[in-house]
Length: 220
Ligand code: V4E
Image 1 (cartoon, rainbow, N blue to C red):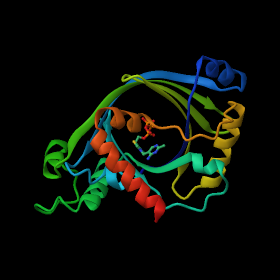
Image 2 (image 1 turned 60 degrees about the horizontal axis):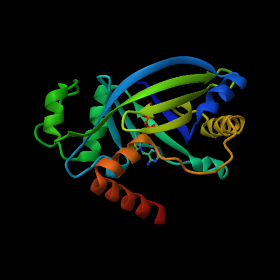
Image 3 (image 1 turned 45 degrees about the vertical axis):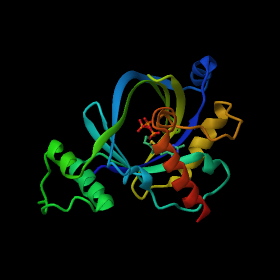
Image 4 (image 1 turned 120 degrees about the horizontal axis):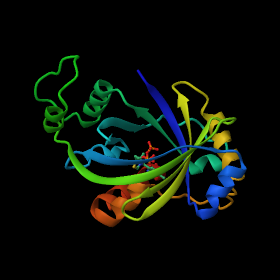
């Protein structure tokens, strides 16, 4: 099964960022436009557990929280880590585990038809938007930098490293920190992702619930 941990730091970019990327030897690998659809139950059973089910250009992906290892430094707190799952039957298994709600009938080991699976689990598309992305790689570091422009008027950059399961998360954090320094990101600010901003603008009640759940988690 393809399973890896995505370690990522978001940042704000400006027109100079392109020049800086070139200067530090980042190579533009592609420019793409994609459409994301996010799914959840009517009670937000997935997202309130920080579990993100999405279809990007028809392909399913699931991002789930990882069990956190100790933070090495302050910069690490600016990074997020999520397990990324792309195998559909594994996605279905995990989603059902989180929901406990798909109890009607046992499911066999085989893949369930997408349409009927969504229906059975009461999963609905709650958000969708398109993104134009320019991607760069820093070969030496194994780091990827994406510059995203979402169609609802929000732009955000991401420095990311994919760590294979059981791989070295701390070295990924260090690579991201070095890249951030090369890009001149001095402000140690937490930058919000596209979904956060989308929810705040379009689904404020859902967003408020997420914030209060996150708050509880951090206070625990
Ligand atoms: C994990 C998550 C969401 C899913 C989307 O993740 P993200 O990496 O932000 O999106 P995108 O389009 O860049 O995906 P990629 O192409 O890199 O796979 S939506 C919200 N979250 C949780 C989350 C959070 N709680 N806080 C921050 C700062 N980011 C994400």
